[in-house]
Every structure is written in C-alpha cells, then in structure tokens.
Image (cartoon, rainbow, N blue to C red):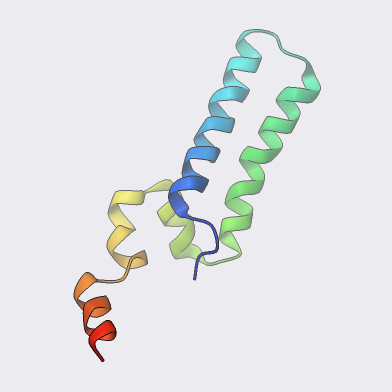
Length: 81
C-alpha cells in the first residue's frame, strides 16, 4: 500500500532535478544545489524501501502501471462481495 502517490513523488523528483540543473546554470549558492541533489537521491532510496516494482514505477510509469495498480474488474468484484 502506498501512503504517498507515485505520481506526486515522480513530480517532486523531476522538479528537484530540474531546479538543481537551473541552480547550476544560474550559479546559485552551493548549499541550495546540494540540498536539491540530496533530495533527488533520497527520493529513489525511500521508494526502494517499498520494493523494486515501486522504483520501476517511479522511473518508468507507463510500463509498470498495470503491475502496480490493481485491475478495475478486481476492485469492482471486491466491492460487490
């Protein structure tokens, strides 16, 4: 069970990466770039604690979306019973 949505984590991961690249480009303070790089490294490590399928879903959402998300028919049948 995911406590935080993978979509939200994916958006934060790519946002922090883009902000770190922009920070390098505009010569931002080193501490801010280091903090953004730390967050870019910490997100996949935290997701890896949930399993390799979740890490694949973080980086390749379209290929493993069917593995991570349950089938709608299964959910519908579970609600009927």
